[in-house]
Image (cartoon, rainbow over all chains, first blue to last red; front, side, top):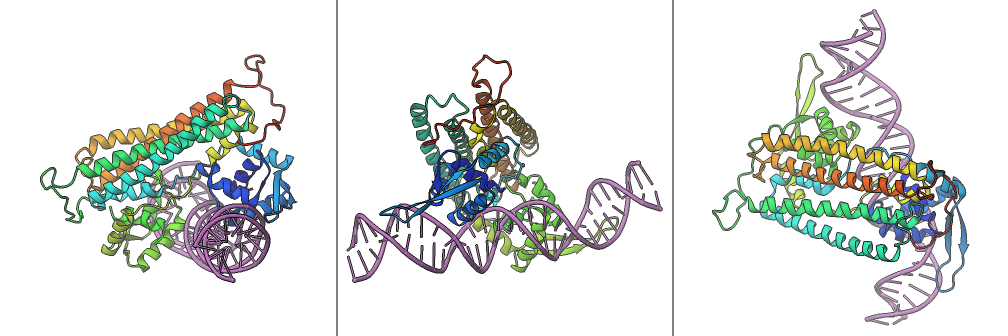
Length: 206
Length: 206
DNA sequence: TTTCTTTATGTCATTCTTGACATATAGATT
DNA sequence: AATCTATATGTCAAGAATGACATAAAGAAA
């Protein structure tokens, strides 16, 4: 089974959902650490059903199109449980912003500072949203957060991961923005920064 | 151009490299935040050359097979510079370990604690390696680290990002391992943990 | 002598992922 | 009346990524 399959099973282990619902969750809660569009989700649900990991029943709705509600089977829960206990393959982190930072030395200082300040601001916004959810969880879910066998505990755990992630990114962006901003070539002389020079020497060993 | 293309250009903007060298870099320095196998790199280099972003020359070697050494063109550097200054698309983070944590409530406490302790240990190992490199950079590259127009400054910046990433992950793994470990159903009674119960109630709203 | 490892370059099939296309119901808005 | 949004489910083509397959030269080890 694919990782996406386990992501979907992780949702269905909590509650029965339609494909549409799964798609919504993928942009919300689970979206902290996984993502997929509906064009991936519907075929994957079909594959999960083929494999006997989920079943569906059609729910007729007035005032809305009918929907297929999926739920995890025993086999599905077993597979999920087994997968969750195995160490994941160590794949390289792919972060486009860090990749841009790797070439930031080519970019004008002010422009780069603007980019990383702005990105830092976004991380801080996301962090604030997460902290809000965290506060809400710690109040409303207090009883479950000490019980690792409760689904809510697991949701809380992933949120904490998201918080540390956003915090680290925000901190790094702030640091980088400041580092590229203050230190233009003039070193305190010219009031405005001027882009120049190309920087084409010193190309060894970075 | 693809993101991989910019990753390769980011390397070639520093020094001329063969496809093999690029592949090695992708498992090392750049591997902090991007990754690719040689089966992706060779075709991408060909595409970059077709687009006029890189050129190559064949270097004949005694005692080694001949190699194609690629270097970035002016057009390549310009494209890289422009790309580096644009905000990246905000894609969902895909982290398989966090996804496993999302289903950790299904897993036996001791088993889960073992998993996250072990993963935490790996993050700490990686962190230690990064910190070592950092110390080395701060000594050997001291003159460049205050100059954002130096390639080494950019390399250092990405390393700092990696350090914060590993630190956050290590901290989270430690916390999670402890949380799932101490709090087994018995709460201090039974010496050994026993898996049981299935946990199939309380399935709403996580 | 054979095998193994490192350097060195490529292809190919499959899978994963994205974005566009496609359809349909119903309420709300213009 | 026409359009827009939200719900609801799907397909398809193209691109990205992985892992296996394939070749080759030279030194080092068995």
